[in-house]
Image (cartoon, rainbow, N blue to C red; front, side, top):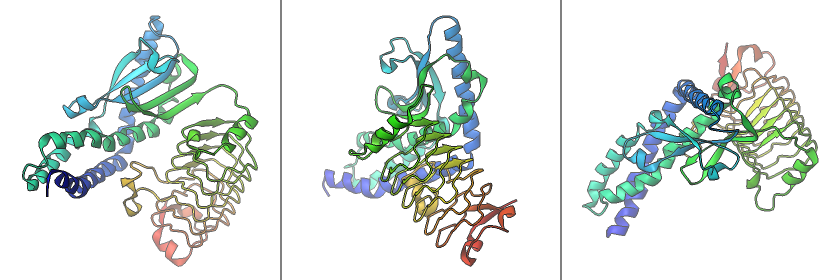
Length: 379
């Protein structure tokens, strides 16, 4: 093999396997110790909030529009696992005087050194054609694998953190965002507050515009809006949040709803058929008669799906009313139904392996013999 062939072979064989091994360790670390890492993230975030408040009280900083957590590739490659945290005004990256702080991400990047060592070891079979500089360049791009866990931890932790006084004491813009990404580069929204009034008809018209695939509808916050009986099939709403909305009798057929959060929202008779609902959370929602036929909502452990969807929480229906809902043929591996109303809920042909029910639901839930043996029962 020449040098180019050797590098391609190295990527396809050694790199792919070692990346999968590292991500398996990361996924276990995240899922087993998620609460601990979340508590540490929240503590760090509250310290950041206090620093912002102190700067505001001294008149050094006005209202905050953005807080960004930025990965610094060079620092990470040199073993300093710190994210740059910036509190900025409404002008975002054009703020000339951001308040700069840090977040320690060692819990995730602790696996980087071993990953590097395994790649160097695997490169020896190529007789120098896969050199150390090439491996270092590969590692620079592979940092994103670990970085995705930081983004997911922030997304998981911030709803709790933003309920605390340290956050509430900050003077914020009407539209306030927390983002995680790369320094002076692309970032993704992990938390948003928008206290401006939202007009239901304007939002409905906007959601109806899906000519470009609907990507502009992702990562959004919808509050107190009435979208009932709307046809929003094939829309991409991933990581969006719905608070006290009405989407009753809507169609969300064939939609991408990964990581969405639905809180106290009316979703009665909504058609979610064939939609991707991995990691979605339905909290205290009215889902009576909702249709989830052939929906895909399995957790990341199913068929090593975490390789594509890292750190994804299990699908959850906490406190929701699923009476008469239809999950026929749905993929629900690891889903939490333990505090939902599952009276007359249909699970015909659904994959319920490791799905969680409460022992108090045994008298009402209707499962076949195989499903009874696959599910977990919470006391």
